[in-house]
Length: 384
Ligand SMILES: NC(=O)c1ccc[n+]([C@@H]2O[C@H](COP(=O)([O-])OP(=O)(O)OC[C@H]3O[C@@H](n4cnc5c(N)ncnc54)[C@H](O)[C@@H]3O)[C@@H](O)[C@H]2O)c1
Ligand SMILES: [Zn+2]
Ligand SMILES: [Zn+2]
Image 1 (cartoon, rainbow, N blue to C red):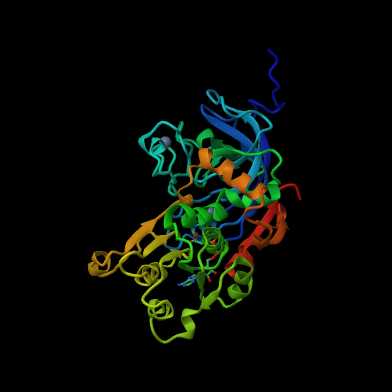
Image 2 (image 1 turned 90 degrees about the vertical axis):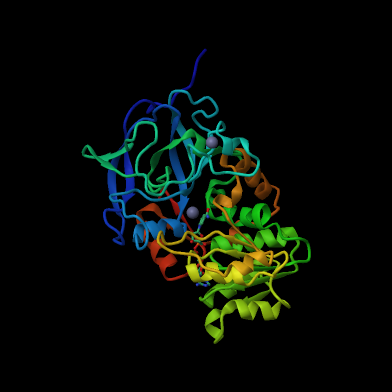
């Protein structure tokens, strides 16, 4: 049998990557060497990537473990260039979304309907190497460069564990569905799979960035009648109107705790709340503001590693529930292809999340937009 193979299979690929040499310093375009994929790994050509706040946190490395030099990036879409030994479900040319957390298919989490926290491939922000051999696939003049959450999509080519790749509908436009590889699926899933608001209920969303507004989309799809957006940045309220957010609260406009404002607005508390900020105070407010008896708060933002959550235990006894989620509880390989198809069937839009475009050579601009709180997602075109 003839098997088609890319001309670069098995070879080291020299290509461009945006390398973070130091915390908080602009990324530098470098020529890197990308080694061939090893056992159960896949090398992909990234077509589009975008910037998620999680990249920014680990690049700033304030309250997160610093690990440099490193190639960031985890929200992306690409095409398989070659596969390593043992990979049977992906081949050259497949369209894929890399995901920061994976699905081995064999562990107790992968076998459970309730969890996406794969024992082998769950998110690990402190690891800069591949799990197969504890080595990096990126190097410059023989010196290794660290990976980020197993994806490192700020590179023309990257190597990813096959369990962290969702094979998607080849008709899906990669310049749009790349944002389903993290932020949008996370927000949607946090509402639809974890918070599960009932029809007609009230939902508070803390943080109206792309993740929070995707959570608001989830609330709209679930039939929530009140979607209350909470953000410190008033610019966000303009964007949020396109996402079915019905009311807005800026904690800065009130001289009492924001949970009290929300409780008053909703006759005792919201039915569900989703925290999409990463700020510990917002996390605590998101829990305090849910109704007793049935309220559920879901934490989505990535906290500082030393942050401590506090509440009075009586709040829990009073039948409030606190939950959290990575990737909206979606299993990347099993569930993400159908999220892409939901988009293809026009069940939700992606265009309204995409507020900026930059060529790869100007990737630092995407960081500037996010730092300034301007816009939602910035698509980085790897071929420009
Ligand atoms: N759990 C997961 O799987 C997962 C996946 C993706 C992103 N995240 C996290 O989700 C969060 C949101 O990501 P994003 O890309 O949408 O970020 P973003 O920067 O686009 O949006 C965050 C928003 O939160 C607002 N905010 C900050 N502090 C606030 C506070 N105290 N009260 C109210 N609003 C506040 C900001 O003004 C901003 O509008 C980040 O913490 C990110 O790391 C988690
Ligand atoms: Zn992300
Ligand atoms: Zn697993």
